[in-house]
Image 1 (tube, rainbow, N blue to C red):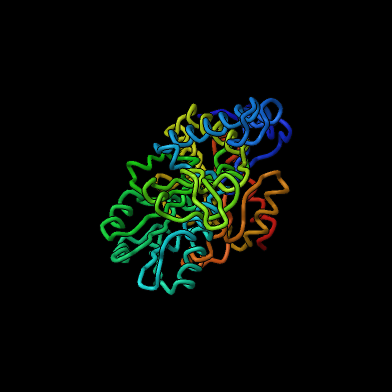
Image 2 (image 1 turned 120 degrees about the horizontal axis):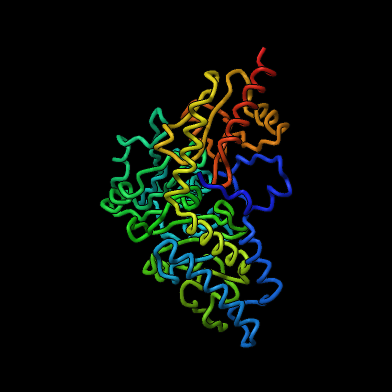
Length: 393
């Protein structure tokens, strides 16, 4: 059993906190906080623009962070674009792809809104056809629906559901999309904190992730894109550092990845994210996933029979428990748990099409991570029993 709670100052400062909202955002270890603090206290300057020593130090730290993320994803540093989050990364792609009315976009009912709405808007703007892969009764993608990938131009899907923890068969989906000639866009915001990702083996065209969901800072995300595509496609935002030359007649673009990084970037965020990745790598993703699934299996085992759980067995998902207590609204459950210093999420989790497909309007979600343990799972279940006892007459 992994024991890392001592590495996270928030638990020292809030010793009674049981934090089970990790699918929304994660707490930060001291090493990440120290990396950002060291940058601001000892190396702060803008990057790429100064010939003086401090700027050179800041640039080296920033580009070293990019190399760390590239190694983490098995990509080239030229293919790693720093953004604010996975949402911005996906919107970037949706705004630069040359989609027309003769094209077909395929999404899924499992997608987070950030990987659903941009494609819906693109379809409305271009008049391109859009179709959605549906769900099985266990909230997994319906294999029988994969034939919708035929003749697709773009296929945007989630690697792992933030609402149910379901892990999609990414490699199979990409292969089928490639056979159809479609570009693939993966939302890895939920998977990157828990699973090893190799973009070369996946052979995806684009992949997005968020730093704050994997022990990193807020305001920093990553877009991976294949070099040959990024070279051909137009920029998204324009301004400083993404240009090579500007005249009154025309502007030419900088080399990759700077073509897609207009303006002053989140330098400290990139540095903090790289340290978060190193922290997770020291633990090991196999151990991390095994730890989460052990906690999830334990929760499944001790849940009362008046708790309805959605999604597949723990072996088919991340450490996410999506559920409702019979007779109690999800928000009321979350409020009762909050009174016991237990933080969970309630609502639609930015996945309304998914919940609608399951005949639901809201669920409770407990999501486990590296600093959680079985004692906390037991306290969580005890609080669920209290909510049922208190609110069900």
